[in-house]
Structure formats: structure tokens, C-alpha cells
Amino acid sequence: MYMISAYFDKEASKEIERLIQKVYKATGNTFMIEHKVPPHLTLAAIQAREEKSLISAFYEITSDLSSKPIDIVSVGMFLPYVVYITPVLNQYLLDISYQISEQIKQISDASISKCYQTMNWLPHITIGKTLTSSQMKKALEVMMNNFVPFKAEVCKIGLAKVNPYEDIETVCLYP
Image (spheres, rainbow, N blue to C red):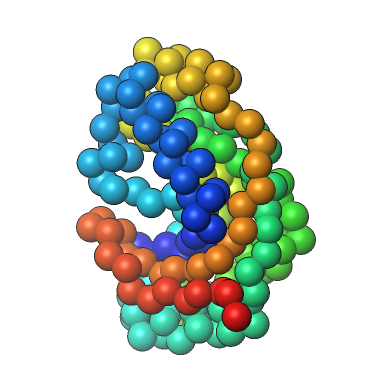
């Protein structure tokens, strides 16, 4: 399994890390801390056998991308154990999703997870994961008391392997 993810400017990353730390301190849940999960927005989860073709597609996807802002506006949860913040699904994110889809379609042994396909994708930035029911309640309380909508600049796109996590390629979107 591979992921293509967006990474953010320093200020937005600091804000996301602050929220992750607050949830960790309130719940005692160590998943995000132990796994050193960086602030990111997963754009696609991809099954592929041949990494070389995926890398070529990644560079096609990122060749015309530029850094753009997104508005992170809300808190949500995937029951039973994930709390996240979410951006507005704007044209910029839709275009990236579409570009990824078009490039991955051209790889015979690759497919995008159904939860990350264009128009079937809920963009989210995980703040807490593997939370128990009582931890979820505490995490939501923390988010209610600490989350304020903010802007984030998408400044980097990365391709990584998962389980175990390993960065493969990264493209900086700043000129």
C-alpha cells in the first residue's frame, strides 16, 4: 500500500501538532506520537505492485502543481476511534484528486482505495487514532475547546509506503 499526501507550511503544521499534543495529553493515547505521524492530508491510498510506475505517475501528478492555500474549518470523527480536522473540499483539492485518479488509471496493476477516489473522498487530517470510546469523548472535548478554523498552505506532496511507513519521493511546491 502506498499513500500520496499533502504537507503544510510551518505555521499550519505547528497548529496541527499542537492539537495532536493536546489530544495525546488529555487521552493518554500515544498512537500519533509513537508513530511520529507528521501533519498531513492523505490525497490517495494506492494498491500497486510495481513501484517504478507509481513513482513515474507521482512525478506526472506533481509536475504542474503549485502551492495553494486551503481552509481547515471543522472537526469530525470516524467512529469508533479517529478524530480529525477537515478542510473545505475546494477546486484545488478536487483537481489534485482528479490528477491522481487519471495517472493511477494508466497503471495496469494499481488502484486507488474506494475511500480516496475523486468525489468519494472525505479530506481529513488525523489528530487522534485508535482512540477508545472514553478517549474519543475526551478528544472531542479537547477539540471543542481548542480548535479554531485556520488556513494552511499546501507546500509539499509526498509518496510513501505504509506498514511500515517509508518516504519514497517528495516534491516541494514552492517556486
